[in-house]
Amino acid sequence: MTPIATDHSAFDAAMLLIEAEGTRILYTGDFRRHGRKAALVDRLMAGPPKGIAALVTEGTNLGQDKPVESEGALEDKFVDLFRRTKGRVFVEWSGQNIDRTVTLTRAAMRTGRILAIDLYTADVLERISEGTRLPRAGHPALKVVITGRLAERYRANGRGEFVARMARHGISAARLATGRHVVMLRGALIPDYAWKGVSPTAEDAYAHSTWRGYLARDSRALDWCRAGGAELAYLHTSGHASAADLRAFAAAVRPGIVVPVHGANWDSEAEGFGPVRRLADGEPLVIG
Image (cartoon, rainbow, N blue to C red; front, side, top):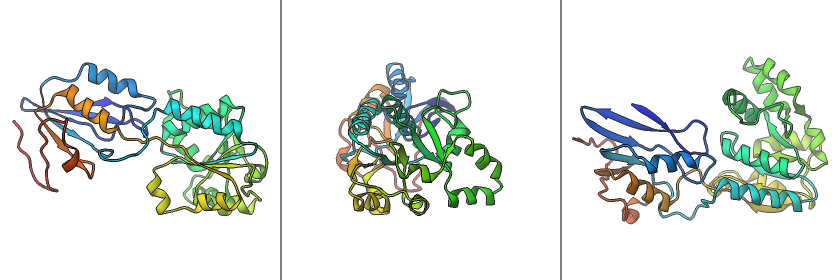
């Protein structure tokens, strides 16, 4: 089994080339071709492994209209929002979406702003950034917001030293009550922010930067910013490959069969993939 580094919003994503008894299978896992590591997918498509009997692939975005522009294009949109906003910009995104954290850090640097991230995102960055060029606590464009409830949770789990260390690169939530910071936001952070006097105004902006479907589960951040009169924006690009890129990848690999593992629309979107073998949950497939 050979891991092949690929492009995805999460860190260290890899496809798997599986070889056994003279048979080769390529499993894509989640991937895309419009992120900051798109060159990895382009390189693989230019020289794919030979003789792939089965391509086991995701198809999340088949039949979907999710945004699939590049992270670079998204960065430019954040820059535009940051430049035209007089006050703070509250952004809701996942701390595990490393590409998005990089995009926001770069946009903040280009506009002379500081990105304020929470303890969890600082923790994620510290765990993965060693030996990379990824931003982390101590980066000139980053500050770590030390909020009471999250800090207490870390201390209760024996991570008090981490909280103290992050405080050296930190900023109090009270400092975010005014100014022009780019502020990480999600519903769970609102009580701590509000306790410290942070409240959205008409001079601020809010950008939702995850899949829209998550808003149906938790719209507290959006509602909080809307109530304060902030400008509302949706700035996001998918962590999954577009339908066109999925088909192009399959065409480049030229497998004997394509086996879907993700996606709700394979029945109507199978054209352009070659032979597709749909499997029920738990159904075995003999190859070779």
